[in-house]
Amino acid sequence: MDSLGKILRGEQVVKVFGRQTKRSVGAESNVATGQIGSTNAPSTKPLFGVSARASSSPEAVALVDRSRSLTYGELESRASKLAHSLQRIGVKATDRIVMKLPRSFEQLETTVAVAKLGSSVVPLNPNLKPEDFARAISDIKPCLVVSDEVSWNQLLDHKPELSSIKCLLVVGPDRAIGSLARPGSCEEYESSIRSAGPGIGFMPAYAGARLSIYNPEAYGAGGVLKESWVDQEAIATAQQEQVRLWMLNEKDIYLLSSGAHHPGAGGWAQLTLYCGGTVVVMDTWSAKSWLELVERFGVTRSFLTPGQLSDLVDLDSVTWNQADLSSLRTVVHGGTQCSAALKLRVIERLAPVTLWGIFGDSDRLVSRISSSEWIEHPGSVGRPVNGISIDILSEDDKPCPPGVSGRVMWRLREKSHGVTMSKTSSRQKSDPVFGGRYIGHVDDGGYLYITDKASDRIRVGNTTVYPWEVENVIHGHREILDCVVFSVSDNANDMRLVALVVTKSKDCDREISEHCRKYLPAHRLPSLVLRVDHLERDDAGKIDRKGYAKRFLDGEWEESTQISVPAVVESGDQALSDA
Image (cartoon, rainbow, N blue to C red):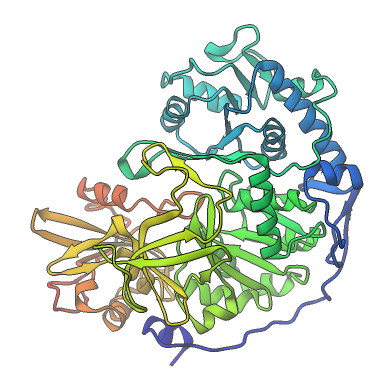
């Protein structure tokens, strides 16, 4: 039986993967303005922070893309001048700064400047719809907004609450913008840096901005702001813990290929700058471009979403054989769950590079698992990292034994260095227990397995079904590119499962039906499977199941010419058969 079949059936697979590389690890890369780190051993006494790195090695490259670079000396100077300008505007440590920018030097530079003031930065998805941007401004009530001209003008059409905003900082043309174009209320980004004084000086212990996370959708409950309640010392402690955990150093070169607003991809960029490494900024995602940039700059680490991993492994063998990934040591994936089929393909393709899967909240890493561990514990998201303990609790808050699913909770074994609070939560700062949004279990070895979000639980007859359990199996068929499973009801007592799938070809209905019949129990079989051309996911790879259920009930796909004859289950006791 093949490895994937064993995984889908819940059997253990132990296998060693490996592939040849064209040159040995340890090569150094250069750009015209400075040295990019090599994979040589780190210094024995690392100097943490942008300011410290700028003081010791001002010529070291901090940020680089295809056409330009910025050294630590330049980054420190520009960030200090920007921080000086923000002080002049009136930004204080208690203020929030909203940032809606694409992946760019300016995005990371602004975060460094905000950290110098101790303020809180709220990075928003650059693809956020204007109406959601307006709601975010009204919910967050920022002191400052850093955005581009187009996004701001689109925002004004939705009449957001602007009374809290002292200034708009525009990345783009230097001209008046919208209703905020009054004296002292709108400045162009580069002009603000050029006109600033000498800056606020050397900051010896730069750790990072207080990062707050805003969810504009919050699953239909309105926008939710998770705000950090920590100081610079606490941030520095948390950053140093992560540096030690991942063994980061000033020689690391990180490829930023996902949205920097995401705490995974953006957090890794901040960690890299914190330990004095180089961040390679990728403006637009492309699997081929990712391979090219890894080779060109000698990238050592990168963070990818499952969707990006899928794009990579779908590249042809010729492209992969021509790629030189000998500098690459670590790829981390997160944002959403990764199917067993995809993960197995990625492990095989990337080996000997270590693929790490991580699980946690937006502000805390809870568990991680390496590719070699995952092969021995397929489907797991790993064991808890140092300082975290995981509890699986039943509905009556009693501990569940290994193998029994319940609410996944985690607690801090030591004093917290990053407790957060949601504006919709009654949690107090001192409360050490977190979680509850996910259902899962642990095995006898302490490895955690996530079933799905508790809010996505579906009752089908007398049984409970979690959409991810079904999606994971459907993803296991070689013709499936993407899928989403959700529930709909014809009446209050009749819930059924519907699957939308994106396939490589249109001649695979029977194969997919047989695959589902082979690996899914009767109560998890979808009553309807429809082929669609595309499924929309956010930058973290997450999909809106409830949104797709509503679109299905609104009849969006019933008459679509893009859909072939679906595979249907007549009842819960019957297998899928071609309609």
